[in-house]
Length: 166
Image (cartoon, rainbow, N blue to C red; front, side, top):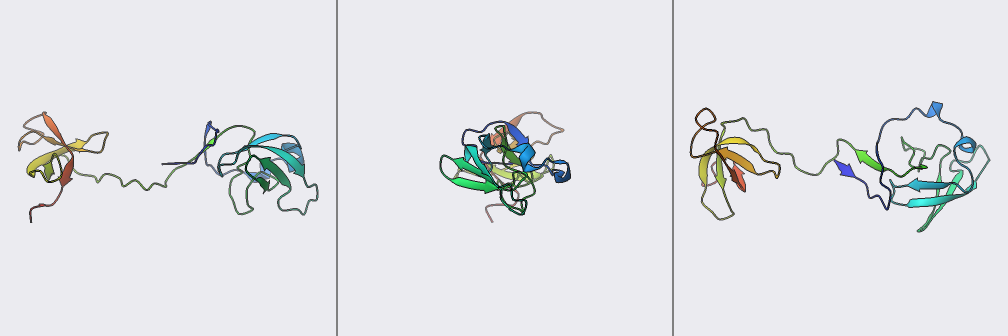
């Protein structure tokens, strides 16, 4: 899971599709002087300093942040192609589900033979897989026993599904 920088913004919200047809127009949502937050683009808190009432204006909401001035669509989106508004009256953090650059652990069946060792350069041992612990380390059953023969386990810093000595 990916968390955006919050720059002081903290409530957690989820990125969901929003039905824009049910949203109010910019005159009903934002007013000059409103304190608003854009945590998605790490702008933090700012003040609405101008609203262009021309209905043809693409980015009528103008906000002054500490580090910059930004403009938004009538419903608070950063660009017209964005699916969700980012301009909010509350602090938030965008949580994106489905994007991660953390490699997931492989699915290994219990009692699958694995080669394990405690440290790099150490001796490899053949054991039977039990599970991965919360730190992502392989856990095997003690000795060369399977789950039906023991409940005792050991944790290893390295593992291989293929013989690393070949």
